[in-house]
Image (tube, rainbow, N blue to C red; front, side):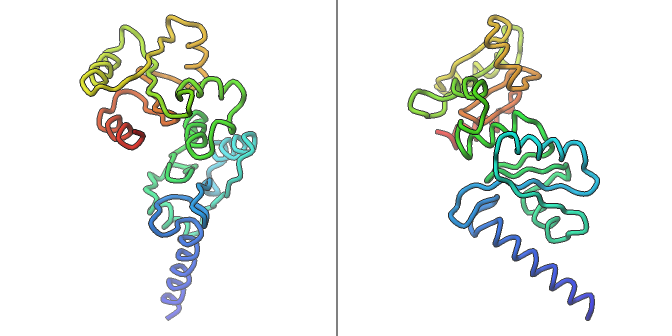
Length: 213
């Protein structure tokens, strides 16, 4: 009976969390009006990366909620529902789930949720290149001449009549600076608006283009 009572309490807390974070028909973190929220899942053992994530969000002046899953089965269940890979911090920005902390990935998710204003002045300048004058997303590929996967991406864009802009960090100091700010560590690095795609995962690229256009 006691065990059953504990399970019922856990189920009740999980339901309360779900209603608070996951409104019906939405798989992600949203408020009651359907606006994206930021949740940072941590545990007692996650020191440096979790601290870096919350410090970064503080610098971006973003409102967020920390969810400590240590000895918290209800929060762990919510993490599983959100597709957790067990890597902390797990950051939810609306429907976007990020496993671990990488500044550029968080910036991309924040821009998609809240707009360019969340970035530093230089960050806004860099990310603005990924949108047209009307604010609609553009396809931008950071690539180099010797990259085989860049060649595959170019062929994909040509075969599917996708308009895109290619920027070569090896041919321009300003492009190299932008690429470094984006924490690029390989080629190609593709952006569709604020949406970041590393390498050439063709199925993800197709899915992203379908969602964004």
